[in-house]
Length: 190
Image (cartoon, rainbow, N blue to C red; front, side, top):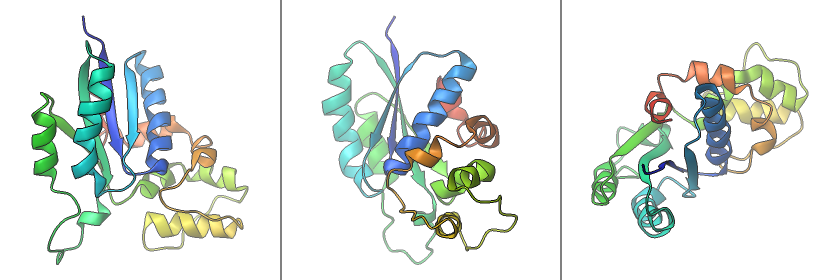
């Protein structure tokens, strides 16, 4: 039987660290040992140009006898502008390209931004920052709220960059439970 490999394309280092921990937690919970490949495409605009290419030229040839489940994870906030002439990604094009390789692309839509998912375990985030748990967060969105939390601890948060330090402090059992509907297909694939 062919080994199943789950491929997750993500936007940046933040998502890469997050999905690594999320997948580890799900696998431990399910007793799964499927191989997980998380590919950082370094930006939302790169889904159209890079996802197909990386899958076809890097991943599939390396695992010739494997079956694949292919996911794209992305923040939905970049698609929320009603007057935007052209969205940053034409998902139909991406789906068609992945489909030409024999795989159906599955979407993990991060409601607004990955920072909103980080905030699910506010206690763990505050523990990392060595600050008291905040009862009311300042900011109009998850990104601004995290940026302000970091600032209150005299630290800088940069969207899309390595967040491994604080991701390691988050309780992914809490996060998995809160996101079970958002990542349902991913959980089922494992």
